[in-house]
Each structure stands twice: as structure tokens, then as C-alpha cells.
Image (cartoon, rainbow, N blue to C red; front, side, top):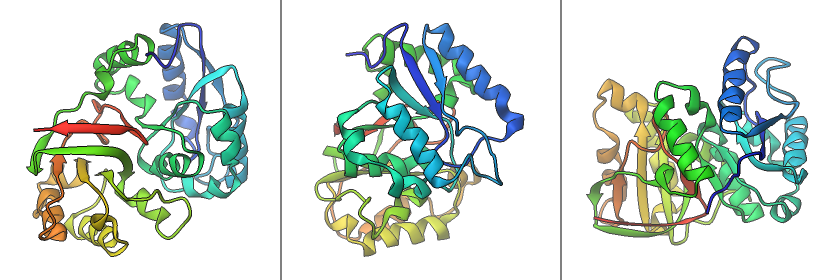
Length: 287
């Protein structure tokens, strides 16, 4: 079943750090690309930086997101931001209203904070994917997958190739995303329950000492005693620099004797040809 139909209106917003004004041409290019698919665009007021790195206060960004959820003409929300400040909006959202006005919300990286909080507190599925990839290095492939999946009802954008590190099958509801951002939710009411979940982890930056420390923090909060599987997306900095130990070794070290299934894929993360995975939706992978 397709998420969008030709003629639909989609919302564009920055809930994390604002877009630099000099990059407005990229936002305009995204709009042109969506228009070419017969989709209309409606902008939130919080897109560009207005004070330092912010596209508005946390409350202002939250208010704009609420407007997009409540607007019945908006059929999906694409967040074009990333960075560090998404958690500033969490306390200003009305999760019951969001639940009643459920619609697809797309974002990744620093927005993993929001992807998981919306799943936990509003009970809606969220989409680990950035619409900015439609105008990136792999725009042709991205536009094709976007159209075939979101407009034509196929599943091209969700098909990921995996390398099995441990085990041969995993099944469960996916939570997680960017490891740094996910851990901002530790100890808060916004962190999803790890019980029987498949944990997605990816990162743009971070050498082995940093990623290793994050993995042990997940261990210390009990994540690895509850989950049913791990999907490792791209760890861009580590992979591009050939850091040792790599993320596979780091994960196996922290797991110890636990026989949790683990897969590695470069189809999820910051690669310009990255695909989409749905937070809050069940996934089944077999070797």
C-alpha cells in the first residue's frame, strides 16, 4: 500500500538544528524534486537558523511539528534537519494528539531522538530516512525507490542487504537509529522498551573508543539483556578510516557469551544511497 498519492501535500520542517541560510538552494531543490513527482510542499516556519544553530526555540519547533500533524491536508512529514538539538522539543509535544493524527514522519541521524520518542509516547511508526538524499550523489536511485515505494506501493526502499555476524535469524519490532542520539533518551520516559526488540545502531562520526563507550552504556542500561537482535548500519567515520577494532568486533566484545543475532548493513545510515527502515514496525531477517 502506498503512503502517498499524486497531488498530496507533504510538510517540510527542521526539528533538530536549523538549516544554514546559504543552503536554501538545497531545500528549494528538494521541493522541485517532490513537485516533479506531483507532490505539493508546505513549509513549517522552523526551517532555517534564526539564532545560532537553532531554527527557533524548542517550543517553537514543537508547535510547528504539531501544526503539521494536525493539518489534515498534510499526508507525510519530511524533516530535513540533523545535528544535536532535537531533544529540546520532546517535552512540548502532545503525543495523544499526534497519535490521533497519525501520519508518516521521516528523519534520521540526530532525529533518532524524535523517531523513538514518537514511537514510544504516541505509538506511531516513524521512518529512518532523509528526503535530502533525493538530491544527493545517488539521486537517480533514490528518486526511483522513493516513487516506487511511497507512491506506487512497492517495497524497494525497505529492502536491505545484510551480512550475518552472529546467528541466522531475527524477528521483532525495530527501535533505535543513531547511537549517539538514542542514548540521549536513556533514563527518560521517551526511551522505548528494549524487551524483545531489534536494535538498530548507526553513526556518522566516532572512533572505536567513542563507539565502544556508547555500546557499553547500552549494556549498562540493560539493553543487551532484553533485545532479540541487532542491526548495525553504517558507522561512516570508522569504516572510511579503517579504524581497528571495527564495529563488529566492538559489538561482539560487549555481548560476550550472549547469542543475540547480529547483522551488518551499509543500506541504513549516512550513505547517500541509504534506504529506509521503520521504527516501530516488525522485521524478519533470515540467513
